Image (cartoon, rainbow, N blue to C red):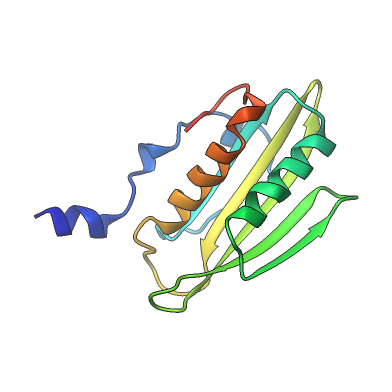
Amino acid sequence: MSVYFFLQGSRPSDLKKGSEHKYSSPLKPCPDSPNCIHHAVEYRTTPEKLFKETLTALESMNPEDLEKDSQSFQINSVFRIRLFGFKDDLKAVISKKGDLSILFIRSSSREGYSDLGVNRRRVKKLIKRLSHLNSYSNKP
C-alpha cells in the first residue's frame, strides 16, 4: 500500500495556490498531464538580487545544463533523472511588479505522462532554498 502512495508522487495541494494566477506569466502554461508544474512566488527584493539567488539555488541543485540571461532575468536549466535518464526542463523568469519581484517557475518532463511528482518536488526544493529572502506569499 505504501508503494502505491509513493508512486503517485506529490499532491497538487503541496504548493499553495494564489499568485500563480494573479499575474500574467511569461512562461507557457502546463499541459493537462501531471508531469509539469507552473508556479509563481512574490518576493520583496530587487529582480537583480532574486535572479542572483535563484541562479545560486539552481546551481546547487546540480543541473545537467544551465543557461542564464541576466538582462532578461531568465534561467533555463535541464535536469536528468538518474534512474531512467529522462530529462526535465526548469525555466525561471523574474518580473518586477511594483515593489515586488515575481519568480515564475515552470518545471516539466520532456517525455511521458507522469513524473511521479519529481517536478513538483524540484520546484518546492528551489522555493525552500530561496526562503531566506522571506517570500511575500506562497511559501510551500
